[in-house]
Length: 184
Length: 168
Image (cartoon, rainbow over all chains, first blue to last red; front, side, top):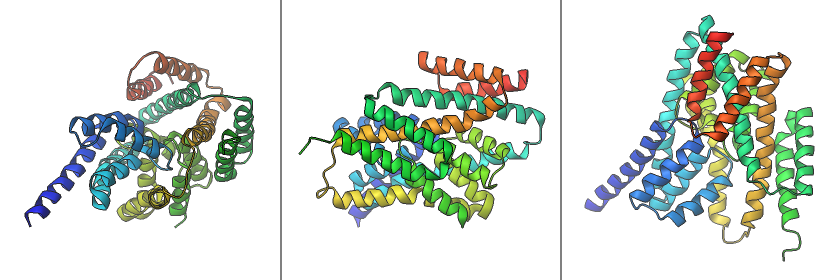
């Protein structure tokens, strides 16, 4: 019985760590990664090397990176229940946060000032997206083949957005096979 | 039911962070009249002023709009089904499948770059067709400051909103 209580306490502390990080980090998933790293490594839950390994797995999965990371870390620490508690901890703050804030904005959305404010924020979002694109491309190893793929995919998707899933899958697979040619 | 399937699809394609799918969310939901463009702007702003991944924020809000609190929970869950399924599959197959890590990460980065470019095109198109020169200048000023300084993006969101009130 005592063991069970201790286990429950650990699960609760996993939940609490992820809940706290998620609730106090504004600015999306990527802003949360360093906060998760600091917290878990400082508390000796995990070594830096293990963290980086899980981070690279989280990045190569679909879905929000902070969520993926919480599932992987939770399951590494305490198996299935660890993953469940960590991911619920990550999801609760954004769940209520967005419902509350968007309802407040929506309530006053008829006001001209709110409309102008939202238009201004929208402009900043475009600048932010440009920066995200720049950060990805800056570290990218370009060659003739992937530049060609990049532009063909963009033209296809501008013409028809319904192809997104297939273009993405095709692009990633072809580039993967191309980079691996000669290996084996 | 439609919105759950839309967010399942978005979940399957959201590699490399939320910005890869924001454009896709806008194109699908606004063009099929699930959201007005104004509502989209409201959620986009709210998502950046609140914690959490932007795709999760959008799934929660749209689910809530159509089916209330239960819809919000379900829609968030549908977005997360693909990563959960893939994570489970990976867990069981990691010994039998050998993927070249560097090639995989490079290829996913290429795919993500294409999707983020489409998001930029989809969001920025609005400013270009409106010939909104002031907005385009602000976009580049914010971009330059994000590159050169370490100021938190949320600062630019709020300041740009205030500039919007003052000059438009």
